[in-house]
Image 1 (spheres, rainbow, N blue to C red):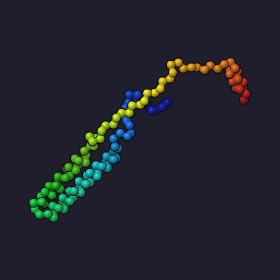
Image 2: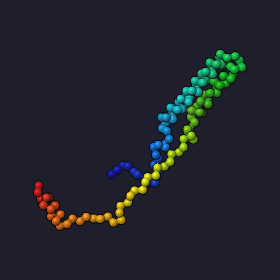
Image 3: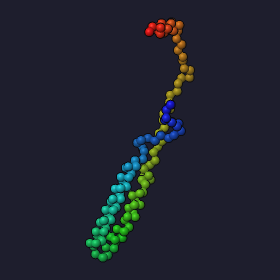
Image 4: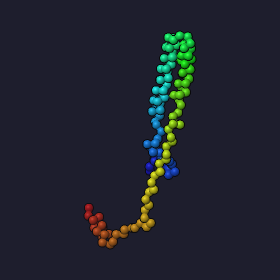
Length: 119
């Protein structure tokens, strides 16, 4: 008995229109977060090196960037990727209305008995 259960009403999704995998999504989120944190480091360095009016702008940027980095990195890309279309399988050809049954003739039956007795 097969362990595979097929449901006739289930939608099959084509592989070409499937959503990207979780590993690809995770990699893109890591890259976004790393870029935002590198900008934060630049803000810290510029806060130390620049004069007073610009210093406070860079300090605020360095303090606020972690919040925005987390929010933007965890934003789902599902809004940008369209949903997959279900795959519609083609109709299966049906067997003819009346299947024919081949009945062996007496000659074929007698030949089969002769070959069965020879062992």
